[in-house]
Length: 134
Image: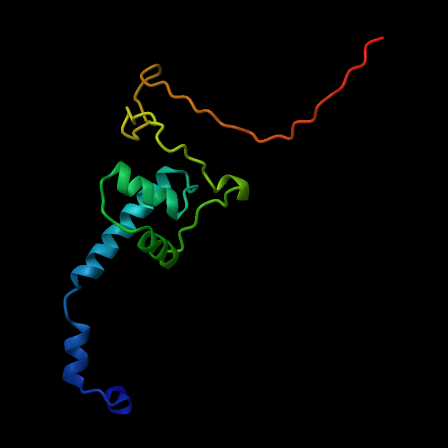
């Protein structure tokens, strides 16, 4: 009765309903699973940009940042909001950056197997102080 009301043939409906999943849809489901893994490993903090970086640089998966954002939105996966001033990164052209010596795998089985450090800059306002000496 629904097929008649919608103007769809019943064999066409069942052919559509029982068709196998497409390659694109299969890849999107696979990517969504990877995105969930990366997001869980980051303790639900990574947004689409960091998840994309982890997939492309850490795992070698070729995927666009836009597709990662769309799949995260469809799966209701969100990261923590970042600070607005820190979103823009100033890079010095021609200056080499350090290599990733641990290949983004920071988990170790025992203490003292891996030491890492981070340099974080905190922007402040510099106010000159004039000291008068008698």
